[in-house]
Length: 88
Image 1 (cartoon, rainbow, N blue to C red):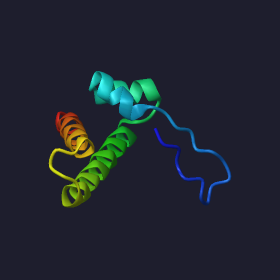
Image 2: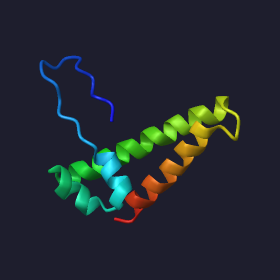
Image 3: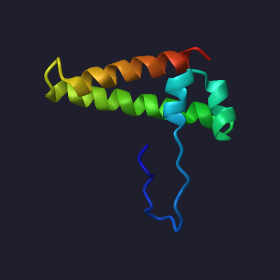
Image 4: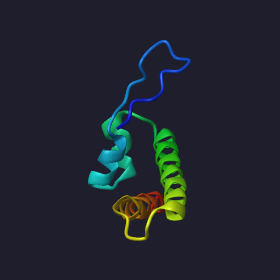
């Protein structure tokens, strides 16, 4: 995971591997339990991640060749994360 921006913050915000956890077990319920975050925050994190992947995919589609590995991977990631989000 990428560390959050420290701009405007006097301390380092804690980071964790919630996205990787979700990819490993695919259950939002376990994501909340394993990472100590509320179900509301879990949904918000996953939804914003899916939205970010969709935006990155749209940008890459405009510039990258169709068989680009990054584009292909982002499409697969977006599909998998969206299906997890839709299953709740």
